[in-house]
Image (tube, rainbow, N blue to C red; front, side, top):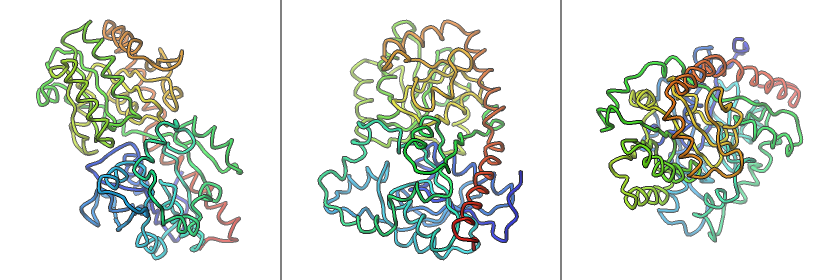
Length: 429
């Protein structure tokens, strides 16, 4: 499938923030689909806020990024509150970004990667310009535990809000109802969205991976660079340092696992989106004498060779998230031929088939440190099984999740969105 012929080729992606220093799954998705869209003849660009950024404009891997001033419309926010919201979940407002959406030339379609006020700005700009708009749910809407929702709202607890009028003006509560397509990256979120939205313009589109890029790496060099003994059994976790990702449980399980293998090593790689949680992790490491066997590395840029090398350095990739809409890092580990062990939650239980392409544990209920440690021990003692699972995962990633496949599926959804916009407006400008 090729891009639909149109006099406009501009695709405007609008995430809440987009910086190379604070990289995550959403950023990977937006960048990779933008690069694929360029190959299909489109002109994608990323319009976002200045959150966590130092420059207004830049190119990231050939994709233009344009950032705009913003605010959080609450009274009494401290600098720490604003920083916490920049890191995760902040409901921001940007008048200059909205103006840019209204004025951008050559726009074929708007693609929102955020809801709330920012998503409302995309909705309103699209309607005023008679353009189609789609919304991607990267998790955090229908399929989020209440405990985590409360954690995200802590910075604004008891803070008077002066921005509600703008949420109403931009139709923030109508985003998903009015979207020409709603895209869910996780099947659990898909089912919940279908049950709660009053239309059928809802589709499942998984995340993808650059299989070729992750297939080759230098694990030995990575171990030497970061002080991981050559012969140590290395467990790797690549994800935000965040309560959602459940690294504390992984540390508790690793402490038990180290009793079976004193030379085992655990590496946590990711930006700290919840600094208080990172403090808990470091306290646990110190209190349990794990300093010589555990290392926390800051998040790696998407184009850093160390990201690929980290997967090739490990013997086992672990992702015990409390909830996970998809799990793009699983695809990266698979593409490197590495076995994975994940928690039986959200999109992970649909992605990883236990015993076939990985281990999906915790099915009896809440995953415990004792169970995870025991399963890690079983895999550590079975190198042939690990090799089999790694190869099966690599085939799975290549067969179903390469970005070139995902981009074609996304183009089909864009065309459905355009058809709906034509039905709504009579024509699209």
